Image (cartoon, rainbow, N blue to C red; front, side, top):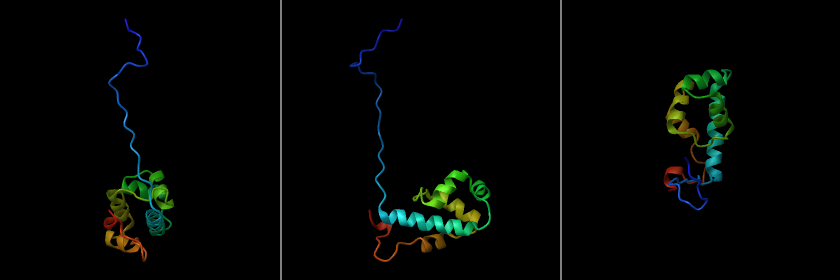
Length: 108
């Protein structure tokens, strides 16, 4: 028989809320530059084709291309670069901070 649980009793369950730091305008802009570059490199190829080749969902690629996912994981970007025939060096150069912007790795 189960005993009723008092609302004040401890259940041993804890909930941790993770809050992501809001992106800076510069991070959003870099994400938009990355998305535009990937969209241009995709050309007439379908989003589904490129996403599948990179092991992603088409929705993930759509979010990256539109800037709704402005900071994709490194291995996601590397997989997309491979499928699109882009070098990571070119991506870094083309998505580099604009003049006056502090590079992400140096801003910490």
